[in-house]
Length: 187
Image 1 (cartoon, rainbow, N blue to C red):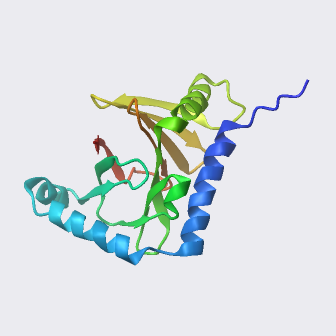
Image 2 (image 1 turned 60 degrees about the horizontal axis):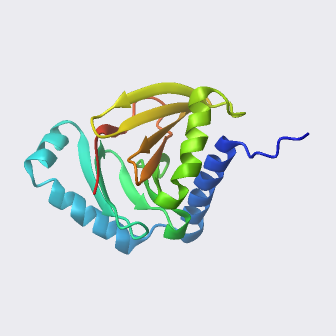
């Protein structure tokens, strides 16, 4: 009997591919990009923003039009955030370097898709998935835990489950992470 169960890593990669194709097809949303930059520049005026600049970090804050959740975190100030469109594919935002190479991207997982993603990442963690992605470990940051998986030689996928909301962060920075996982807040 054939196993008709889809490969979970293929599902994640398809979601990522759709986000990238949407970005290529629709380009950068300059109006929303301007709003992101305005919020980020306001954040850099506070003491945390000033401290972040000294540490080569910038602050990112965005309210999702899909879920209504507001997410914030610190990231490498050498990157520029861009909205991944269309919003309907659950893409959240991608971060590009000065050559427009994607360094990492964040995809929000709404409550109606949490069970599927929990199962997918549980299989990866337990080694029961047919995927070649390997579980690297988890780090607790108080109210949430970041679980990381190596997908190929240069890509790390992080899974963060907040209970009623989830995030996947795909890091293509080929080395040091460009996001400060300890700074993630969801409201």
